[in-house]
View 1: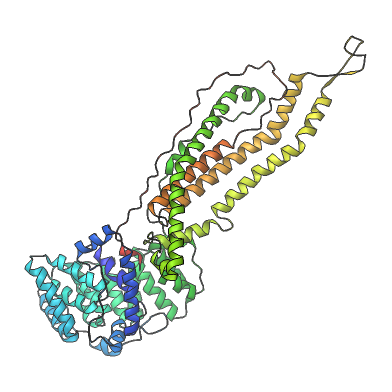
View 2: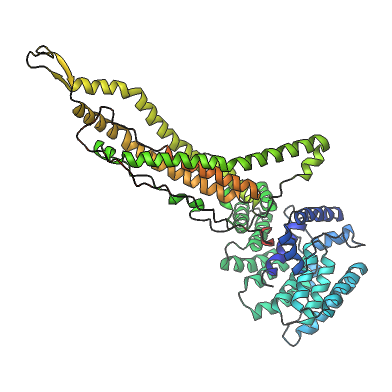
Length: 563
């Protein structure tokens, strides 16, 4: 159950943050059901294996607005409970041991049975008996309890979890989850002895310290809560729940700067719209860099780094030696680009057909069709991806830097076009030959032209010094920025696009990369005819091929993103 500890608080906070009435709870349940509806078959299968229902049931009969308020117990605008002196005074004055723990768990179960509705008790008994008769372990039954909790039935969940703990009071995970449920279910005072016992058994365990901090928080003892939570964040700086709760505490004290810092730490671990909204209320606008990447990106997606341009010439002599390589390179680039364009056609046609289908359906059904056809690419990383893609377009982002790099190339080309003919004439004039005597070809003192090779050399030197050298630097920078843009966009788009669309995106990026490579040739200077330097006649240059992108993203169940 090592992941269940995270799941327990995470899902609950996603579904029930700030819900204080039955109507609000029902609204949260609808949100939860929408999220469940978007799960893939693999995710739903995993949920079934955990005993988590893939459908959110209705609220238990008899649940009232008062019940909801007590259960969720939120006080200030950011959800900080008021100090509950009555519950604090009711904390059992016991120091639990391994010998006395089972009896205390039994007393908790009796307390729960008296406090929950008859329907919840009946349902809890049914499921517990079913799994018990099928010889399921206490751990499995605990997973079933978490399933009910995550789908909005805390009474059934805490009943089943209590029974699981009764079956195995030595399982620290079960006990910690049970205590967390009690805290969030309106009985944090009853959870304190269990959590203090676990804290002695497992000192400095961040999960237990966090649950203990949350219990004090629900009692309104924010100073005691913060003391426990501070130990958690010292061990794990980006602990999502501890930082989240500390944010609420700091905000309640008027320390907005510290509250923002804490919520940013929580967001850095895992995304939720609730965190973004809270930061907005605190006056902070979330940036893509505030959120973590789900996993390490492929260092060489599509094999872009496999491509190597021919050597860039630095003189006229080099140019003649390398012409064949550059000719072969550009020929292969053109062939590869044409093939990629053909590969893209089926995807373009499929996208056009899908767009037409959605358009026709929209005309027929209106807004209902729009709602029905929401992208099935929604996943736990989508919002993070969208935010990062948005950031890339801002000033200073990779798209901006790429644009600036391209502008530098364009300016050099434009300047060359403007000055080329004039400079050629100047060089020709400066190197013209004057007849020193009368001949059949010219009179003495007459301009008889120029030596092609001398002018060629001077012209090449001018172009390489003025244009080809800075152009090569600009090409290198442009390809660097394009590589960063493609790799970054590919990484995030895998979370925002369906499979077919992403395949088309990969092909389009391959085409963009190969065409950019092909457009990085030096300015040719060999315009005055053959000179003594010998030109290589053939080339062994072979253009690399693309790799398939190593897409690490797989749809898996990860409730830890919510809080």
